Image 1 (cartoon, rainbow, N blue to C red):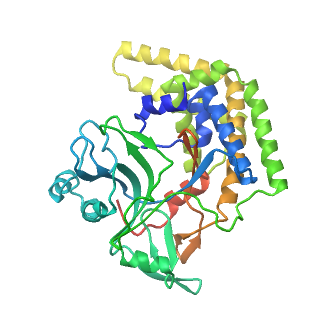
Image 2 (cartoon, rainbow, N blue to C red):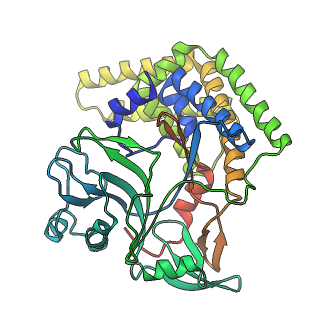
Length: 407
């Protein structure tokens, strides 16, 4: 299945959830592993200075809430909304009364009303998706390392802009701030297709809205691999390619095709992410996965009230555990491959992080600590998009950073 077909079938081609690049090995089997390696090769080429590379980069901004806005092609009316606007029973807001009915929670309610009041001034023709970064009243003043900043914290990351800069003055004058990252086109909301190669040059500028797109820009030209770094990431990707060719296609595709195996493996992997643990000993990780799944399925067997239900669950458990045990060597290779993809990904992320247009910090007990952006999104020439995030770093921040709001 082509990536575009996968998007249409699984998410109706809407940007509701981007996958981590290494997880494509699990999500789409052989095709996903091949795409992940090719994406990284293209990014390597771009950072090595090859101008003909057909991959664009955008920065992941840690905003909240997600904002969808624009013209409903079915009635010609301007609307705002948050996640769910493409659902059959979508919560589309054309008036303040709609927002009160659909989103009574005070925080989201007020932000959507500001969006409805000011975003129509931009002259949006289709539908745009973005992240709200701040609204009037969210911006504070702080002194960090002796310098005065305006700061705003829509989610986990604190964004900081020098108070005396032109950018800070523009933000202070605005009623809301939004970073747009996806555009949609189509004759109905249900059939709209997403494009990550967004163009906002045609939008009307107004002092009431600070907005930008999420494109990654390196005005200094410093986010470029050295010859040594290029050789290093090339070696990693070559190893990944060779290992990929040794893994049976049947095993990779069987995991991708099974909701049971896919969910179990990704859930177990995510328990390690939440704990801040890198998967280094892949043989031990496979053993841990099997024990974790077996314990989980044993609980489900014990919870069964009826005898036939219990027997059915025992049969299912035996089948699942048999698959994992008989494919333990292949699973180790799969996790080794994912680790190589992560290693190459982190090399790219570290290089991209050297460019910061806006300061990013996390709150600590004694002030603020400099941090990197949430991550990046790579988009190829036909619209495929995968996210590049340092999961251990950002997940750790997400669970431990101090926040100045509550959901």
